[in-house]
Length: 133
Image (tube, rainbow, N blue to C red; front, side, top):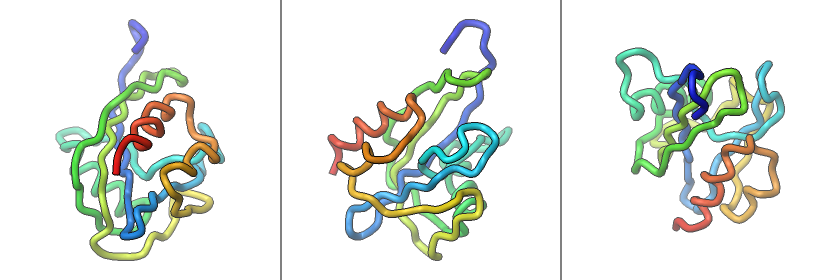
């Protein structure tokens, strides 16, 4: 994190299905449009990271998830604010993904993640996921 930058806490859900594939989605936004990401977003005041992850998946994907565990956290300083990302492994407990905040979404194997364009800062998460089962 660069000195003097505002910090923004965000969460992302690394959602895994029964086939051990991960759900990624192509971003539909003014910032980093068309970049692939894991579902998630800003943490609201007074909200836990886990609660934010669950809420964001409802809003973005219209699914209910259960958090399995915390994975890691990292900073993305590519923007005018320092984004502190908190990543969680999760699975869907009800619903089928509807891509409300994205152009599209797909299920991919861990080793296929590098075939998609993510934010540079997400590389540490992609690398970490290669070491996990």
